[in-house]
Structures are given as C-alpha cells and as structure tokens.
Length: 574
Image 1 (cartoon, helix red, strand yellow):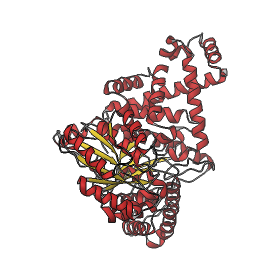
Image 2 (image 1 turned 135 degrees about the horizontal axis):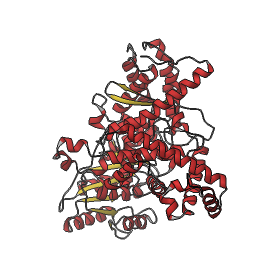
Image 3 (image 1 turned 30 degrees about the vertical axis):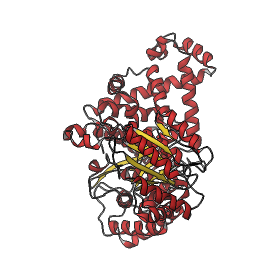
Image 4 (image 1 turned 45 degrees about the vertical axis):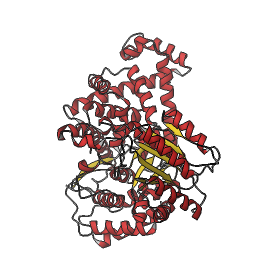
C-alpha cells in the first residue's frame, strides 16, 4: 500500500466518519469488520450483511456477496482439506459463472484457489474464512496481471501496464478500436485528459530518493503532462466528429478533423503530420466502430496501423458485455494486434465478469477503467485494488488518493489539527460535503470502504444523501458566528431559540435540527479521539490504525451483544 502524508490520511478518515455518521441506520461501531495480517498481505474481510432487495446494484456486488457467504460457511476449521473446501469451491465457481466470468477462466481460478488452500494450516489469529479469501485474492490478482508473490506495498502504487511515451516531433500514436456503443469517443476524451493532467511520470519517480517515494501518494507524484492531439477518424457515425470536438473543447485539447467524405487513413496521416510539425508528443486516434466485427472494419484498422506505426492499439470494451468482452479482445488481437484494453462503464450494473475474464482469455492487459460519465472518470487499472473490490474488501488506497487529489497538503494538515483539537466546525463540514460530492456518488465512495459498502442498501444510501442535503440547508440558515462556533448551538443558553430560527429558515422541523447538532457533536468527538489515538502514525499506518480501531470497537460491541444473548465466542483462532 502506498504511503501518504498524514494530512491526506486524516482527510480520508474524516471522510469515512462523515459518510458513516450520517448514513441511515448505520454506525461505524456496529460495522462487522475484522482485520488480520495473512502472509505479506493485509486483508480486510467484511462479512456480508443481509439487506433489502434494493441492494446497491453496482459492479461486483453479486459476486462479492456470494463469495463472502461461501467463505463464512467454512466455519472454525483448523486445516483446509479437499472435503472441507469442495462445497465452498463449487459455490464460488457458481458465483463466478453467475457474474458472467468466462468458464475456462473460472475453472482455472478455482483450480488455483484449490492448490493454494489444500493442506494449509489455518494461521493463528486468523479465521479459516479469512485465509480462504486470501487465497481467492491472490488467485484473482495473478489472473488480472498482478503478482501475488510480492508484498502489496511493492505493487499497489503501480498499474498493471503503462502507455508508451513519445516526444515532440516524434509523437506516440495511440489507436482506439472497438464496436459501436462501447464508448470509444468518450474514452478518447477521458484518455486525453488523463495523459494531459494525471499521468504519473515514472521516469521522474525512478530518480527520486526511495524514502521520498514512500511518503508521497500517487496524486502527489510528478506528472508527465503530455501535449495531446485528438484525431477524429470516425467518418461513418453521425455526429461522431462533432462529439469529439465538443469533448476536446471541454478539456482544452485540440481536435484534428476533416470532411466525412475523406478516407480515414488519410485523415490520420494528416493529423500525425500536424502533430509532428507543432510539437505534440501524443496522438490519440478515435477510429470507426461497427455493430459486429467485419472484414471491412478490420482491414481499415490494419491499414491505419501500418501507416501510423502506432505504438499502442487499445480496444475499448464495454464492461456490460460480460465474458463476451474477453472473446472480443481475443478476436481484435488476432486480427490487428492489440497492446491492451480500456474497460468502460465499470460503474454500471453489469456483474463484473469482463474485468476478470479479459486477460485470462486474450492475454492482453486492461490498462484503464472508466468509472463514471465525467471526463475525469478514468483510472489506471490496478489488479490488487480490483481484487479487493471484487471480494468486498473495499479500496482504501484509491479512496485516499481521490481525497488527496481534491485538497492541498496545507488544507489537509489544517483539517487534521481541527479534528484532533475538536474544533471542526460547520463550515468545515460544508467543505467536506462539497469535496465528497466532487469525488463521486455516495454509493461509489461507500464501496471503497471495508465493511461499509456491502452493508448499505440503495434505500439507505438515498436516505443518507437526503439527510446530507438537509444538513447543508441547516448550515446555510446559520449565521457566520454559529457556523464557526458550533458550541453556541450545543452549550449556549440561547441554543434552543437559535435552533428554532435555523430550522424555520431551512424549512425543516425542530427535531431535524436537534438530530443534526447531536450527530455533529458525536462525529466531532469521535474524530478527535481517533486522531489522538493515531498519534504520530502517518500514511498507511494511520489509515490502517483508523480502520482497525473502527473494527475493534465493532468487535467488542458485537461480543457484548452475544454475551447478553448467551451466545458463544465465534469461530476465530488465536
């Protein structure tokens, strides 16, 4: 796991508390989360909780819940034998196929998990279900292009594959191919923005001191900042050129286009000449798509690749096509030769089979994933983070990076001090609310949190979002003095009359105002305690400590409840 500044970690902890403290019917103290070290991998395993039929319908929900339930069925076993894990493996295989994972990939994955699990003694202090999830994690990691033999801290900061770099006068040519409807044109705009503003300069990183590299998260590493030219080569789809021009204008990237009557190969050739003459170091070509793979499409791509000498040919794959995405990648690779794929619509309601299947069937890496509709919603593909999401273990690293990208080190440090000193006020709350909105949906953020995403259903998320909006309206009705000094509404003799004025001004009930102030005070106290307990811990240590503290508290609360009911101690060891 990549280390980060203490300020960014503090910010992420505040974000976690902000979410869970205002989620209807949920408390961080009631989250059933356990944390254990298994080998060189820190595993967060979140036991799936039953929810209403309106469970969040996001990528991997079905798969992660099924695997979690299978893992729980293992019980308190001291040793994993073929007999004890056979039912679990059968159910996992069914879960993989239900998630539209290619059958050959599913069988290979199950065989790999079987080899990793058979005959293994359950490590002291770890439950058999956690050790089984660790075996699943390692196999998924290897299947998607990672390396389970290395410590996570050595691999999680690096994506599975990077793009070739060019230079002024000799630009890197990137061809984007795919079927119609996969999102090629949108992906072209997203990729251009990523290469222009977000791509890490790994050459510069390699020259940094090792200690410096360890203490900087990805969003703070030096960027390559390419000069990108987009070339509109889809002359067949109506308004495809106009769409790319609009995207280019929105992200301040020039688009080269000609008439729809011109040969696409000639358009690309002329675009490359322009790039060389004007000092561009990267050219992204938006090629034409088809409804199905046909000879005309493949021949045009072959000619284009020969003429341009493209260093990257990326297939744009719709995640909603499931395992068919893997077959499509193999077919395009056989015809024109691919260097990788971009998986789009990963935030949709598909079942996740594409992410697991593409590399297993085609042998080509997924280089980027589209995580939303905005131009900024494109991320490098990290196998370890994806494996964590699939298994319902969250993705704290990506959460911290998203948070750190939205706030400066100075602001983060100031926020950390306010959290520690319990001086976090309503203005700070409002800032956090706005920053959280800029990071994406509440549901998407929840999915990155271990032990939280799987325990919230769609109704709870909607209720939480509605409550956050109510809270914003309450703050908007406060005076500057009340915003900066919450104690006026908590301890002052005039607090009741003030709260009546605020709730009337926001159009809410007095009880709504009371509930918000009470929850705000509890959240502020909790953040102060966590910051003091973390002390000098930084980066990964602070992040893990915060999460483990939430898990330890929940474990103690759960244990007390069991004792009151006369229940036993559970299935752990150690």
